[in-house]
Length: 372
Image (tube, rainbow, N blue to C red; front, side):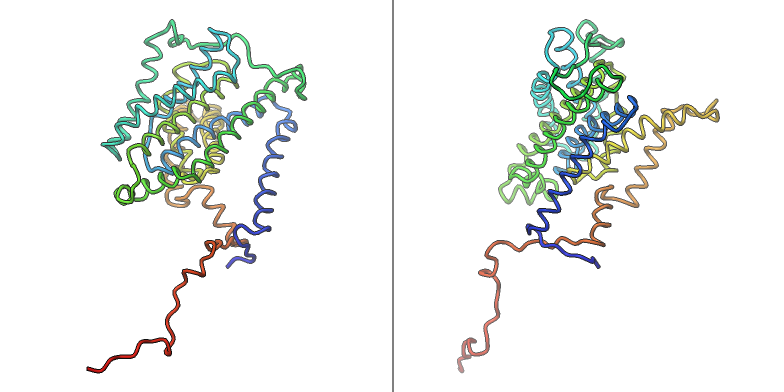
């Protein structure tokens, strides 16, 4: 039983939420200034970028119940859009993000059309085909996308002169990129939270839990599914643009099929039905694709055995099975369970609920029984 209880919506509850949010924001702002290593700042930036992609996948899978294995294609569309506009047309980096959003909205809506008639394994197969087709299309037009050699931007994004970070230190440019990416990611988390709490968000939850009942209740299931695919793809496109802001280079190998699989594993690990589950999911993603691969390749025991990439695949499968059995709700659900042992937030009853409370009539109010 919890030691402390707080009523939802009370002053203590608001102070707790605002205090926790401000503390988390302060940590995110100060953390790169305390890190002396460029590689560690780059890792932190990658976590922020991939959290946006996982957030978009969570809106589709966790909040609308539609599975997708093609999000690497949408991340790639965003990345290629940014690098093409910057390298070939001299656009500012941040100005390319709205273009990535529009293109991915259209692409996501087109991919979401098959979801109106198929679901489950068949829908996963269709989206998997999208992820497999994207690198082929990239290599098909080398004059536009760079082909197998990739495409590069000549200059990185630079901060304005009034910015407080010194750009002439080794950690200056990576820190500038981190703050720009963090600002965009914070905006995307705010948008995602508003979507989930809105009317369309409640419709997405209804489609996820019981599509037939939702349709009978007046929810237009088809537009809701297409909206979920389009918005999810837009979030993935923003993540691709942010990855290019960090490293202004793209190639087909950077947005391959494995990226979609790892994003799904990270979503399940963090918590598919939670907005904030994208953050621990991104940490799991970066640890799997970076540190475990580097650790596996650095071992002398790997000679004649599976390479680092195969080790990552094995670790991802084992991690996915472990989370399904031990933490089916992800890391966020596990943290919520621990919090409930100490602090319980009591839901606030609806406004003016006492008017509708059922009260049994007293004996004096009971109607008399007529004798025949």
